[in-house]
Length: 153
Image 1 (cartoon, rainbow, N blue to C red):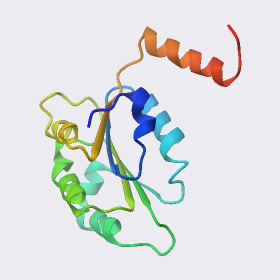
Image 2 (cartoon, rainbow, N blue to C red; image 1 turned 90 degrees about the vertical axis):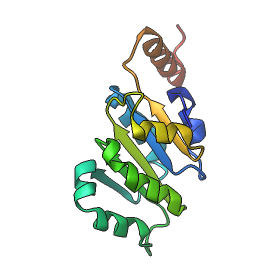
Image 3 (cartoon, rainbow, N blue to C red; image 1 turned 90 degrees about the horizontal axis):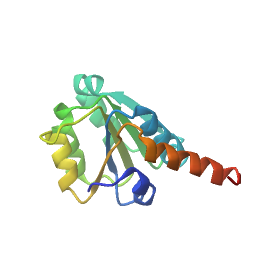
Image 4 (cartoon, helix red, strand yellow; image 1 turned 30 degrees about the vertical axis):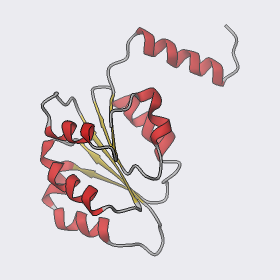
C-alpha cells in the first residue's frame, strides 16, 4: 500500500508490520522513525544491514522466530536494502508473525524494483517515498514548528 509521508502517522497500527521507506531524504526517514516508531518500541530495537542479514540468514530467522521472556514485540530496522532481501521479507510476511515490526530503509528504488512492486501491491504492507525537500515541504515544516511553539506570524 502506497502511503505519503504526511499520512504515515495514521498507518502505524498493529495490523501493519512491514514498512519500506526509500528515497534520498534519509534525514526525514530517521526523523519519522525516531518520532513515531521508536517511542512505541523503545525496549527491543534491533538494527541490521542488508549484507549482514543475508550473510547470517539463519541467525536472523532465529532472532525473529524465537519468543522473548522480556519483550512482547520486536522492532527491526534493516538498512541499505535492495531487491536481494525480497525472498526473506516474503517469507516473513507469509509467516504472519504478530509481535514484529520491520522497517526496511532503501535508497532510491526505480519503478521496476521487485521490492518496491511487492510492497506497493500488498495491502498488509506500507511503502513510502521520501523525496528531497522542496519549497512546499520546507514551508510546511516551518509552519509545524511555529504551531508547536505557539508562535504567531
